[in-house]
Amino acid sequence: MKHKESSEVEEVFFKSIQPYYEKLFIKAYSIVKNKEDAKDILQEALIAAYKAFSKFKGESNLYTWLYKILVNKSIDFLRNSKKEDDLIQKISNPYDSQSNFFLYEFEEMYEQNKIFKSLIKIINNLENKYKELIIMKYFDGLTYEEIAEIKNIKLGTVKSRLFKAKEKILLMAKNDQTLKDLLTSLITLFYIETL
Amino acid sequence: MKEDKIFKLDKELTELGKSYQEFLNKTIPNKEIFFSELYNKIQHEKAKLNQIQTEKLTKPLSTFWEQLFFSNSSKYLFSFSFLLFLAFGIGLYFYFNIKIPELKNQETPKFGNSFPNYPSYKEKNQLKKDLPNQQKLSEEFEKEIINKILSEEDPNKKQQYIEELIEFYKKTNQIEKIQKIYETLE
Image (cartoon, rainbow over all chains, first blue to last red; front, side, top):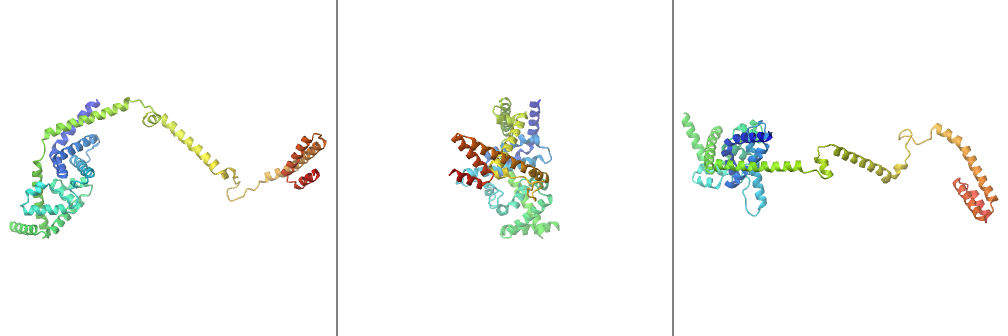
């Protein structure tokens, strides 16, 4: 009887996590920046989720629950790999300010795109609390509600913090001529379109 | 003006986010292979868990400590707490009796801590009644021992009686009489 129950739980678990596989893998890969490590971490996170699945009461969104487990596992992995070998410069937490969030290949791909290049530079240098929210909103495709749930903060705080983050980007863009030119030209275009 | 800038920035960020997601999408490993591997790992974990559980169930609880913490029966827990309580009590007893000896001899005040230990009315009366009796008894004892000294012929025994008498005078604080004995002996 118990065996039957556990196989049922297994079936439900596999069915419910499958739609999020791609999104979760991308998340792990964007943090650890290594395909094999990302695969291992995702498997580890899903095993942890399976073990705790019976306790999951559905009070929170399944995707945000899995997202939280995965991000914690990925950051733990980075921390441990740093401890293991201090001599070799390992990848630091991509949410930290001054550290690269984007993969090197992606940055290289947009080397010629001045706008993206400037934006990438600015996002990398954002303060941790703003950088994290910008990544969650625009790169992980999370909604305001999902961010609030993951970060355990109020919806209003998410919105205001994201607005502030964008203000910071604009402020930093003031020093970046390319982005400044682009934004003014876009605004002019926007006004022409609305006329 | 600021809102417009933010609106446009929002658009640019969405674009950048989309292209980054598209770029990462190419790296996703085969879903079927990933899930079959995950399935195998979960089965392995389950087997490991089962093994631990069966080991726990089949392995007899040998030591006292194992019985105490893992046994379903509460009698070990009761006996352990009783022993602990007993040890604590014994410890307290020795602490007050050995470590602080003055506490042992301390007389408990009759009317709380603020009053000295004056004898009660009954105790005083009793003392008054007892005093003449005690005096009588000591006088009788003195007479008896003096008689013994005088009548005894064996010098060793005589010596012993004299020593007893001196001891008696010492106890009753009759120093003058002791001096007199020494003088006569000399």
